[in-house]
Length: 128
Length: 442
Image (cartoon, rainbow over all chains, first blue to last red):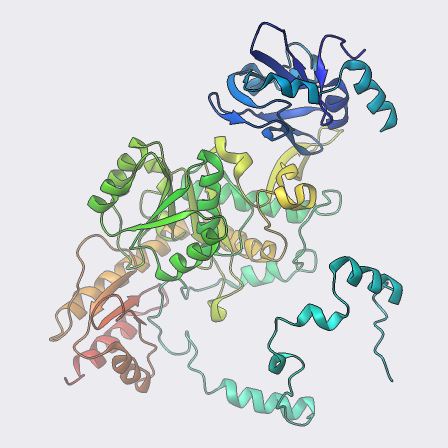
């Protein structure tokens, strides 16, 4: 169920990276979305802002809690999913597609090695 | 050795040792080493125990040495005002169902309290001309400071500008609030000065209207300057004045705050009061404090709940939008009962009384030789005068004549005194004030 073509952080964010493209897409995993419950609001990062790997990127608010979203990579935010402002439920319905959060131009592709593949992420989840 | 053991503390000696060890200190005494030794367990110079009857008569005798506003005519304002409080207000507030300081987190047991919170918010929105309001802050000064912090959260700019005509006491509170988060605080002494200082780094401009001296600010012009740089306009107002003048919401204010004391709460030495806080709906998630929302239950019946609580400290801990908790709920209820008792027309009528009494007094005082009005413009129920001798001497003469005088502002205006008027000041009282001032020799 965890998509194999993505990379994952300990904080339950996913990264879609292709070798030739310096711009990656990120979002939060099914596990994170299910644990947060129905998401009612998202605070997206500003386009053009710089983020650090594992630093704060934005916030999601569910009926239960407000949680920080951490950036799985360092770089510059080049685009955010503005559809989420009116339809934050996309994060629950479709966390790996319509629920994407931001596109980031990565400043250090070596950082991708700090992330997990789907198998490692699944192992982490079974241990949690 | 007779060691005191608290029956309420569940910690054992080994628990304490473990805590001390993790703090890296060897004894509980080390935790207090920053306090000068003379202040630790000092000898208190207290008289011997006395009977309640004895003590009561003594304290009563002492209390009668006070001049009590209301019993003696008072012209003291400067942020806290004496108004008539209808008996119905006290009757409602002291009902057992309401008389709690506790925040009604559980909707299943607190529908009555929550409904009054919702009504408070609704009336505050109508009064301020804003889209949303919370159910109360601690008081006016910290509400204004919280508004500045909120503005910084919204636009992530780090500079705030306060007009000099804001209450100096409020400016002190703002200074305290912005010190730790390293927000740069600037002041402006005129609209022209403001225009030259507002920039793309300005998070917000803080205005008081009517200002500390009782005069109206040009909110229209200030709003234009502020919006030019996409900064936020924060207005601290007086709730009674908003029933008479166009409210800040009409000038595109982003956040409106006020001291709610005028709404049925006696001055009582400065507290407890209630802060009013209203803003544009788009900023609701950055608003501090509790918000009561109206909803329906599973049987489609109307009900009230605390809403957007995920921003608050019991859920978000150190990342919370604010740390506004209990206590003021009862004072907010008082304001709600007061506004309800006065009604839309009643509050307007009262505002007119305050306005006219102040203007009658101004016209009389202005013509007394030696006294003058140092400011021009539109004022509400308060204005400064310049006295021929220091205000503190004027006030002792007034006190000898059983009158509580104005607020000494000689640090802001030479020989300046701020006089305040409400519906409680009869024409007879004002005439007596004028007569005593006229007879002052200089």
